Length: 338
Image (tube, one colour):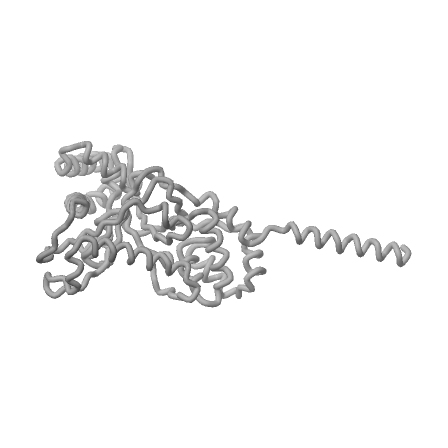
């Protein structure tokens, strides 16, 4: 082959390589494709719950301004806004959290994170609760199971971010392989900023306002209305706001469990407090029954399954004589809508 023909062949090959690289998918595009099946939407209004501690002198509020309803609403709204913003703050490199990274932890029911459940779950976040009603259509990323990443996705992430193998292992191979809860936790480390920006872009472009991961829940048998059930839900969510901040949340209500002298609650707070105290009062006795039912289910002991289910059903119906009230609760409880 003449030198001129060799030069033409080389030039053509180089041009094709450039063309191929120009159309190569970016890490963000590939990761978006991999995460797509795990992006879900709330089908209707849904209540979630956040616990925190409040400063007291005995049963007196240290911050006496919180005796006024408007100040309480300002406080809880600011708390949620500021905690959600931590997900997007590249200077916030906190990784000690066990709740799928930065943002606002939410339980799926008012029992799982309450002081009443502490002996069972080993976690007590405080005696004051915020009930948040999220709008239908709010998008969340389901990370109950890890989301598998294609080899080309992982390679593109490494190539574009310069990520070291130790960080690859920590982000994508700890306990479960793929994109999961710990990915969001450890991406906050300073050396993973380039990857964190990719995730931020995806969350904003896809309108993802929350992430879901596995944790304790008390609503399995409260939600389960079929005798052939047995599936136990363990779920929690982290709210990050982002592009969906203005449309995700319908209402925020502070629910204070202890008796605080001199605090007058408005109608919304009073209704939420009564509803949630009642719900906790039925979820707490259901926990041991739920475990008994699951043991019977696993051992295929149909007699025990039937008797336990009857006891569960009676406990719920005796608490909620008004079935419309029960249906309303179930329709707005995250585990029940899944």
